[in-house]
Structure formats: structure tokens, C-alpha cells
Image (cartoon, rainbow, N blue to C red; front, side):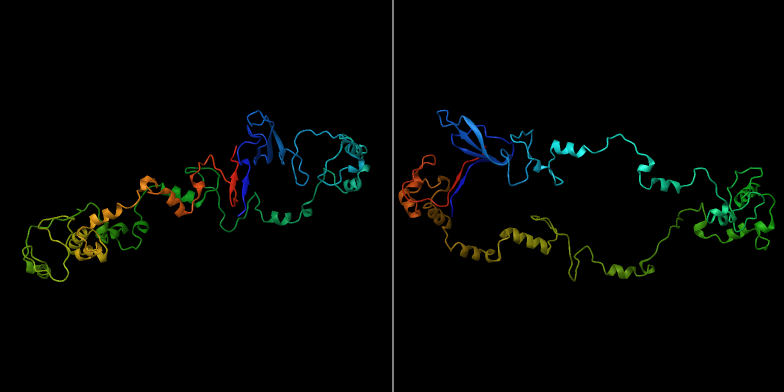
Length: 371
């Protein structure tokens, strides 16, 4: 595995140089893609100046697209051969002025003759004021023939008109709705046989309807009718004796089949009927849902090795073990333990003062941290 050396770095946040660096220390800011170096020494190893050393954020990138801000002054004037040619090229002022030299001003005029074909196009147009006969307009005469004249129109089909307000008495056209409304306002008047006895049987139609009113159509009738007081023997009620014979008596019932009852709450100790569910729950509570291999006293004894002093045996065995809370501080011979683990003298050195003499180091990572 190759060794890894990481510079001091900033991956997000503020662009710019770190606030402080050691003399000669490097730091890379990924926010502005700039590499900074500490320059100078204040006598304590700290840099007196922090300079941008490289990166797109501080120098012109020759190989990639880049936005360059601020006004730029060239020490050498661009050559004439550098005139812009592509659509996205920069245009020099001299090239721009030369291009405008033969162009017309923003405000200027043209005679009709200066515009090719304009006069010919105008000659083919008609005057603003002109007229047309009905025959000159396609379909106009046919459309007019389909309209009714204002004087004595001969309407056909089912012509409609707005219904006048009730009581109107003018030359306005009356619709069938207006007529029916006027008739309904005349009142009942005399009983016309044709109106009230439509089947000519000498009986008013409304009376005939009353003869055939269903029970549900009668209003004002009582909602219920109280029966008179009376009694019946069991034999007079169809099927009652058979239904009673199928019921169990309250005293010493001899039930058959699979009778059920409400399951009592766990721990109940009364004369309440105990269901199979109550018994199973009581047994389960006794063995506390032990697995099948340990739900009897004999199986529990076998699991304890038939040792009546099992607790003492386990306590004595644990006494020879290292204490978890001691974090190996209770190891009897630490030097022997390190040797058994393959640890050399580096295992006893402080993290802030490690000394390595000879040999090689592979697969390490040196991290400069962040700023």
C-alpha cells in the first residue's frame, strides 16, 4: 500500500488564503482552487506572508475555459491579423470602427424607388374607398335567401320567441308558455265534465283516486296499535318448546360438544369457569415461555450440569478473568502480554513523541488537517 501525504486543505466555505501558515507550509483551498504557501519566518516558525502559489483561482488557465474579471491592459498592441473572425471572438475597437464606416446612420430615409419592387406592389392594391355588389360576395345571396323578411314573414318549423311577462297586453308575440300561464290564472271556474270526469263515469277523477289509496298513502293514522292484554301457553307458540329444550339449565348444565366461556384474567382465583386458554397461560407463566428443551425441571437441571452449587462454580470461574472496567490495567505481566501480541517498544511511546529508528513504514497517511 502506498503512503498518503495530504496538505492542509479547505473543501467548502470561504475562498481565499488561510489565516496563518507555518513557514514553507502548503494549503489548498478547493473553494477557489488555489494553492497557498507560507513565506518568511517570524522567528517562531510562522510565515510572515501567505502567497498564492498556483491554481485556476489565481492564474490564467491556458488550457480550459475561464472567466477573467477586471480590466486588462496589454503591453503589446494586438496585430491586425488578430481581427475577430469567429462568432464568439473579441472585437477590437479599430476593427469595429472600420466595419461601421460604410454603414448608414440610425436615422435615415429611402424613396420608394430605392426599395426594389415596392412601387409594383403598391400599384396592385385597390383604393381605400370602393364598393361591391351582392353578387361579388361569394354565398351572400344564398345566406340572405335563408333569412325571414321583417314584413309578414312566413315562418315554418317550430319558431320560438321570448315569453312575455304575465299580464302583457301589447303587439308582442305570445308564446305557448305565455298562453298556458294566462289560462292557469283564470281560477277553477265551473266544474267542466271534460276536465274533472275525464272517463265520463259520473264520478270525479279525484274521488276515484281516493278509493284506491294504499295504506302507506293515508296520512294522520296512528304509528302503532296497542294490542289488548292476553296470554298464551308455551304450546300455543310455534317452535317455542323445541327452542327451550335446546337450552342448558342454569343449575348443573350437562353441556355437550365444545362449550366455550370467557377467559378469566391471568391470576384469577375464584369459582369462574377456567378455559383451556386460561390454563395454558398459567402454565406458560410458570415456565416463563421457556424453550421446549428447558420447560421441565429435569431439563433445567441438565442445563445446569446437575450441579447443585452452579452459582458458586460460575463465580469462582469468573474470578480468574480480567475486569472489563480495568481496560487491561489488571494484566499481571504487561511486558509478556505485549510480546504475546507482537507489539514492540513503539506501543509504549506517547502519541506526541514517537521515535522510529531504522526499518521502514508502509501504508501510512500524513494528514495536514483543514483550515
